[in-house]
Image 1 (cartoon, helix red, strand yellow):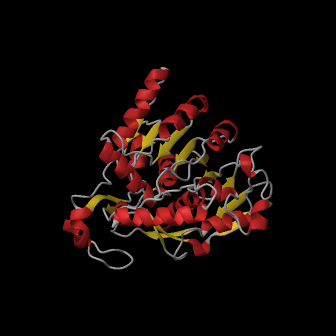
Image 2 (cartoon, one colour):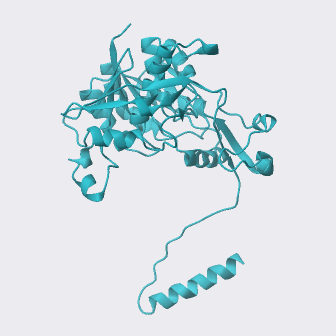
Image 3 (cartoon, helix red, strand yellow):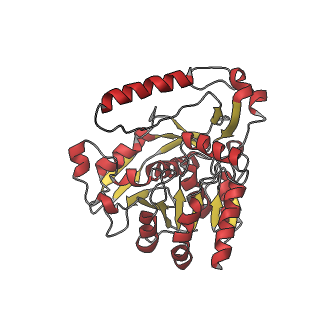
Length: 357
């Protein structure tokens, strides 16, 4: 069993920059990159792609991204896990393989499926998690429904030797937890088998994923007030966060040497609380994380040690994100020249109102 591994942040959203990922591969001594391409809105964008072309429905930036990264990944033996499969993981894998074939490259690409639940969701009679609304009210207009899977299928793909793992909708932090479970053989807790020690390790792994999943946001890219943010060095060449994780779950958050951004107590603490409703119970498909016991130690030189996360057994429920048709929205920018530009603009508004009436 390995004593520690390094895992680096990939993208934090569809369209994010991948040059900082290359820096982590070439200078950060990472063994894994985990890349999050999916916000909740992204699935709606991908659904529109899929409706236009059945071969699409995935985050298309993953293909040029891997074309850029693969030579360095192959040289440094770095494995890649991402959720860029979106609504069509098999389509993403096929596009990657086709692009690699043109280059004469070979990679073992695994596809994770099972998150698509559109045909099952009504039989389960779920309620909206915020307003309690009935899904039946939008049944005829619903176009996708996907459950947030956990680390388990990612672990399986890595155990089968995948170089690249393409998932659909999984919990963001599961992209990072999967490699840790695989490398350290942590117990995922089937049927209550996980011990308190197992749960605490999983909780630490989940916290690592939570700190890294937003790429440059975790290394000062979204830090504090305007003055605090402007004080972060060289954001134009920001380094994405890297975690060196030990087999007991303790981790040191860092970034590649020579990159911009900042890793310190404050930047890490802010990211830890990002999108968290209850720090005492941060739910995931694999473990429930209690952040209140986490200890952060600023080690200086862009390194912060994180210990102390505690975990409870996962629940028997998964979150589902669903989309339905509900009209159209468009935004148009027009320019009107002098003279009387403002009056021309007002007249154009009235014309559009008439056309849409």
